[in-house]
Image (cartoon, rainbow, N blue to C red; front, side, top):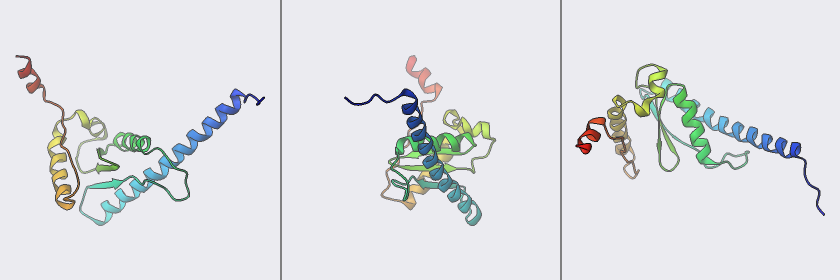
Length: 148
């Protein structure tokens, strides 16, 4: 009969996995931050398209969806405008003005949608084969018209 593992041992193993996962996510975040800093110093652009790596040499495989969510949370929490571009790209903009609290709530703030759409058009011109969808929430006036 096999020995039943202790709960403490299982919890320690789970904690070790979580720490390892967060360590990998921080490595990916640092790569993104390095690209932001480089772009800010050496170009006039105030945005980047960051490709989340499928694999990291020297690290175990990781869940890309969880990593994308981690990156979006950390960057938008620091005031960056962050948008997901399918399948594993992030559009990161730091030239949208305003303070960190305004930018953190960018998904509900309609003033940035025009700028995001303009930036997406520029990206579309640079990468003609890319698939970019413009999906925005309905304005309250459209919702009111539907109710009538």
